[in-house]
Amino acid sequence: MHVGVTNNLENRVAEHRDGKGGVFTRRYHVNTLVYAEEYQQIEEAIAREKEIKSWRRSKKDALVETLNPTWADLLDPGANKDPSLRSG
Image 1 (cartoon, helix red, strand yellow):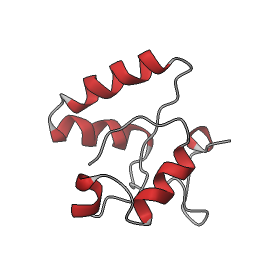
Image 2 (cartoon, helix red, strand yellow):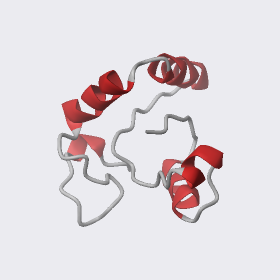
Image 3 (spheres, one colour):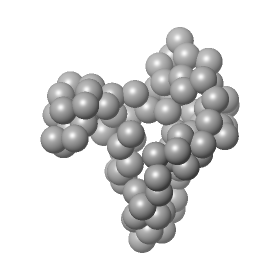
């Protein structure tokens, strides 16, 4: 699982899918968006990123499963999505 901050979610996921992400995402083929949060202030987003990164994997998994229990790709048009998680 990768946790990160971006100002353009769709572009960042596309970079990961094209193999242009960081070392971790390339090594582990992390390219499916299963959870996202939106913040207006970058400082809030960075604080939340640090908080989530400090969690155990099981807690991160539980967070994803609260809003996306099937771990569907949120940027896949064919995936079954909760409308509250759609971007745009």
